[in-house]
Amino acid sequence: MFGLLFVWCPLFGIVVYAIYLCHQEELPVGRLGALAVMLSLYLGGLAVTKELLGDFLTYSRYFYDVPKYDLWSYIQSFGKEPVFYGYTYLSYYLFGGSWNLFVISITTLNYLLLSYAILKIGMALKASISNVVVALFFMAFFFQEFASIGNMLRQGLAQSMTVVFLVRWYVVGKRSWWLALLALGVHTSCLPVLCIGLLPILRKRLLMRDVLRLSVLLVVVAGLFLLLGRFLVHLPFVGYIFERMGNHEQLLSVDSWQTEVGLQPAMLALLFLLFLMAGLLYRNGKLEEDTGLYVFINLNLVISLMMVACEFLGMYYLQMRYFFYLYAFQNTLFLIFLHETEFLHKTSFRILASGMLVVYFFYNFSHNIFSYIPVTEAFVYPLPVYLFI
Image 1 (cartoon, rainbow, N blue to C red):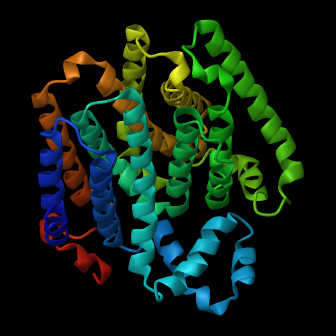
Image 2 (cartoon, rainbow, N blue to C red; image 1 turned 180 degrees about the horizontal axis):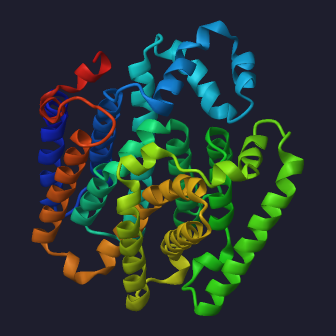
């Protein structure tokens, strides 16, 4: 019944199913997974309705150029990120040349990966059903994440793969190196985050001396990265990231669309909230260090501190690009915070928070520099409409 309701009116079906889940005492994790699938498919459909501008337009041209090449020459023509462009090539034929299906597949996979991370952390915490539902809503209806994925298909997917790789490493206990390699093959910007995420120091509560040691280590690694980058720019497929890092003019530039979709005004507020949540979790001190969950608190802190450093150093392009990684990692911090903070366990807060997230999403959906379908249509269109819109 819920599935049919979702297909007929996705948003209504999602809300009804979420309410149903929150009233259950216990249920298999597959039921929460079904909510994650609903949210991911719906957001995939909405992503299709974005006007073809910026990187989104460029990716559509790459997609429609597929018939001009064989697989190897197509991948080789870009000289970077072979996994993404290989998937683009195969998808053209798999989906019969449908751009809509390609975008739905990328966006849906992105949100499914983020949902997987939330569900695995929820299981590790033994979090309540309602807390996991609110965390899934936070992930899905945080508009800036949706906007960034819609313009940067590659980086959005690589970010989510990076989160899942680290969740599997620390929470599930699986060394899924193949996933890290896939993420690098989608967008090489994830390389520094992968390296930082594997630092053993992040597994525990950080003392001031740990923060200083970590800061020195990151500065040294960044220096070596820039110093050796000029010798590595010719490496096949991965030289691209070293070339960009060596372009000082680009590092100091600003991508205007990222500012105009609300990143810059919201940046300081988001950084403040992330620092606040992490600080309160540190003060609470109930988390056990052997669970691996401190990694996700500390990663949010480290990336946030990097963004503050970029602001002072005027490295705006680097700041903008890596700020998006906070959108992917903040979901893990939010769920841990929900679970560990007692005053957030009230039903009224959960209902209010979820409702405000949906309102926030659709307000921004209709008030940003990119055009999507009208909100009224996003509310009522059946799911199959997005395949042909």
